[in-house]
Image 1 (cartoon, one colour):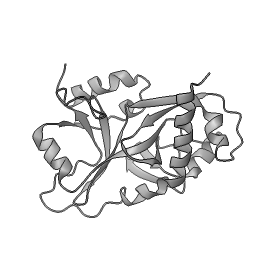
Image 2 (image 1 turned 45 degrees about the vertical axis):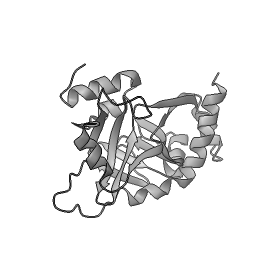
Image 3 (image 1 turned 180 degrees about the vertical axis):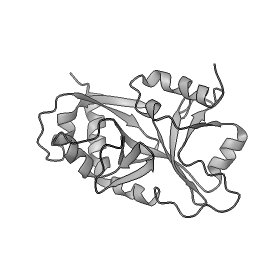
Length: 208
C-alpha cells in the first residue's frame, strides 16, 4: 500500500503537470553570448565536499544555461511512489494501471510545476527534444498517452526544478561546487537511484 506521503506527492505532481508548460521558455534558449560557459545538455555532479543540503550528492541534468541564468532537473532525488492509476485519475483519465510509478524532486524551485523526462519513442504537443534519445514533456498529452498504453518506454516524473540567476551557476562551478560530466541517459532512467551519484562522479573523472 502506498504511504500517505507517497499519495501527497502524487497530488503535488497532479497540480504540477497542469502548470508545467512554463518550462517551454527554458528549452528554447536565446543565442549564447561569446565567452559564456554553456553547460546545457550536461550533468552537474555535486562535489563530495558540498555541504549537506538538497543538492548534496545530487546529479542535475542541465536543461538550459544562457545569459539569463540556468535551469536543470535533479534526476536522483526520489520523493515517493504510488499507483500510476491514481495519478491518471486525478486528471479524469480512466486507466486500470496498477503498476507503481516513482516520483522525483527535480529541485526546490517551482514545486507547482511538473516535468516528464522520457525516451525518444514518444512525442506530443508539449514535448521538446533535449538531446538525442532524451525528450522533455510538460503537459497532459504524455499522461494521456500513458493511460492509453502509448506512452514512452522510459519515464522520469519530476516536480520542481533547480534554477540559477544570471552568472550564479558559472560562479558555483568556478568555486568547485559542481563537477561537469557528459549526460548519461542510462543514469537518468536508472532504477538504482542511490548509485547514480557515484556513477556520475566517475563520468566526471572522480572516484570515491
